[in-house]
Length: 176
Image 1 (cartoon, rainbow, N blue to C red):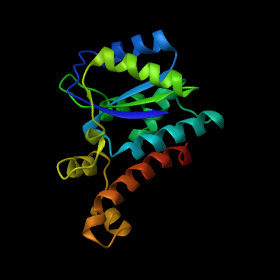
Image 2: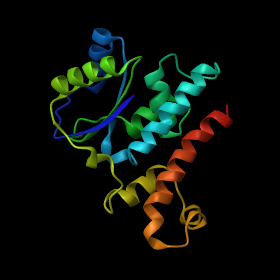
Image 3: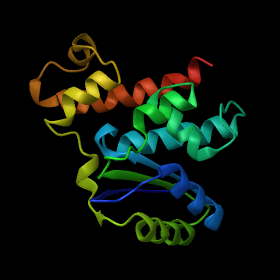
Image 4: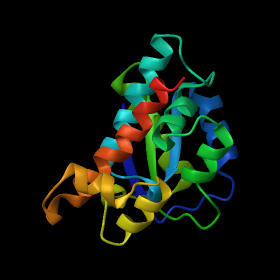
């Protein structure tokens, strides 16, 4: 599994890009709008939950990459998940998730993705910043009460938000 951030990308049609890459490699690839991602951990746990759903035959989607998108968004409907975390025309920073059978396949696919969409590797685009914090909280409908229940100290609010977003995604498996 590879999770990376890319900044300054140019994607006119995310679905076409993903379809092209998936056809060429047969590897599971998902691209997220980085402003809607709450750290690499967010995508890591979404991928783990997707793998578990497939293993247990509880998957919603027929694609592991789409299942990871569903878990990352905490949504049961693919279109809602795409609307929430998908790449838009104005998206310039993305997070890429690659799930492959081997590290070589994953790295080869990452090279193909970066050549296709351009940009510069920068994992910081996935970090929860002061600017991203309020929009992530709103996007994932995280209340102040939930944040307060996770932490008593102000400096742990970002970590609490990441945890709660991961937890919301994990609950997708429980609510099937």
